[in-house]
Image 1: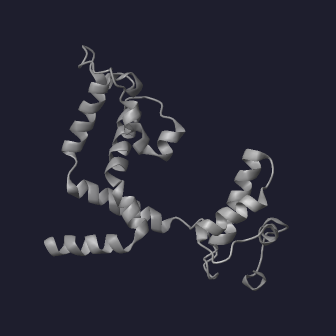
Image 2: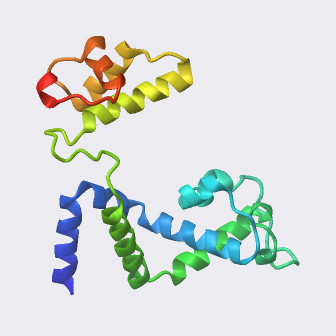
Image 3: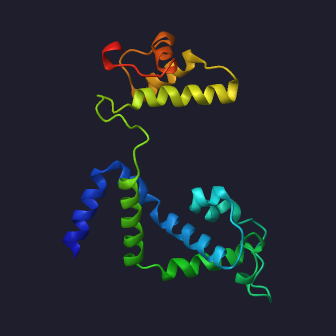
Length: 190
């Protein structure tokens, strides 16, 4: 078993996406348990909590000065937002103490399976950069338009150049072809 764990650790270290997922797996698992408990109790849960379940356990949700003890009413019978910090920590402690390695490994396996099954956001595997550069250009340009009302091509060029650590920075002229028409540009035109 120790050898299998060593092999698993080596495999995790060699895959940056898996490593990033596994570093937050415990909080994701406990966040999912929290959402499940709250939904079963009839509480409505916000969309941002569904997108990032670990946010429900963010320390900022445990208000300082709100150390009240367990109240007469069982805390699990009222909405999470009305629980005192003490009650939230008590729930978290109970869940963490009941979480075994097998449950956590099963959760990790399922999460990694989901990652593998999800199509990449950059669906251009034939390109040398996997399509990352056009993806970044279009995403950043879209964000600049939403935030500032203009494309800010020079800024996008600098940000993409820095993010990709390009030997020569992109120019405004290199950005514009990605944003016109269908947006297709061949690697020979770069």
